[in-house]
Image (tube, rainbow, N blue to C red; front, top):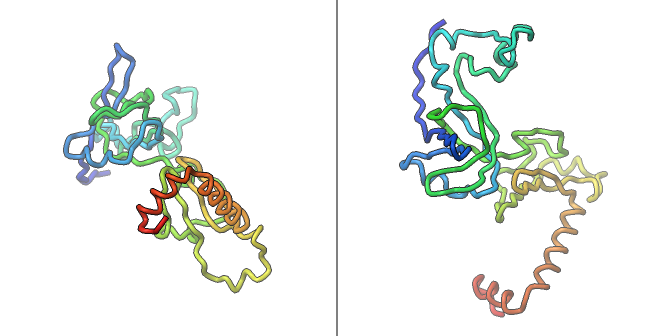
Length: 221
């Protein structure tokens, strides 16, 4: 078994302050711009490289006793979270508690101080905690998705509508709504009800705010 070199560039490192019981990700200066859009309270996926397991001997280990307990039967590493694996990649789902300059303060994790961070992705329930939803991924019009604050609206593709003659608006799932890390769907009927509710909320805004919105959009008051 040989391991060909693969170029991976760390974007930061895990840092631990045992005295203050703090864990943070220190993003390297050249990648700081990639933090734009992250907010305190966000859930993120950390992709780490367990450098201490990056040895030919440990990378050749294909079976382990889960949790390091010999009482557990030998199991293939792909069915475990063991740090010993052909490519010592680690995944963590953590919450950002605060952001200070190039530091992301997060939940405690068992990774060692100095562990390289090779990527950070926002947590999305639809991808990271998949569950059956009425709209299949291939039917979602991802490129037409609109982000509004923490809400992501993804419409359903309008293909094969000839097959929907017998489907009522209350049965037709029209959009995927991602609110922060949470995902839900709305039927066409619910979508219309939401639009009406938003119109009512808009009409309830102070007149001065509505006037400023119209002015900004280039419409006369």
